[in-house]
Image (cartoon, rainbow, N blue to C red; front, side, top):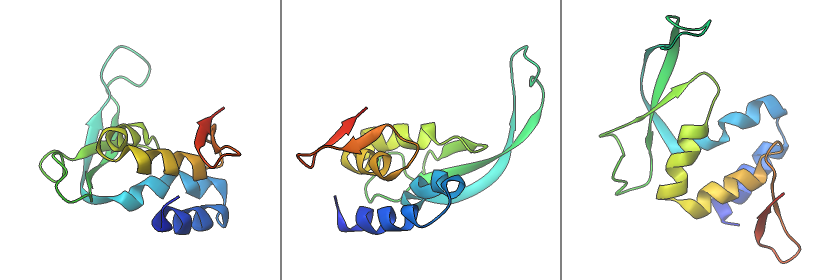
Length: 114
């Protein structure tokens, strides 16, 4: 595990589980806030929700500030999806340190999924 991720892991284990969802945002910076209108025909259709736009902090990232990632509510799937392609090792390390993630470190020191 990288030194940065070890510090994050120590921090994650010291805070309540509700706060661990945002660990991934340490690797992005907030660009702006806005609104998202839910589409479709479901019961949420037409509702306006608050959203945030996040940009990857990695130097040279093709997406970066040019095309920030929309983050609605507490879901972090789009942020992890970006890290899977931009920084796959970091994405896996972050999954391992989260308590609610099925990813764990095996006996050989490699990360594994349950």
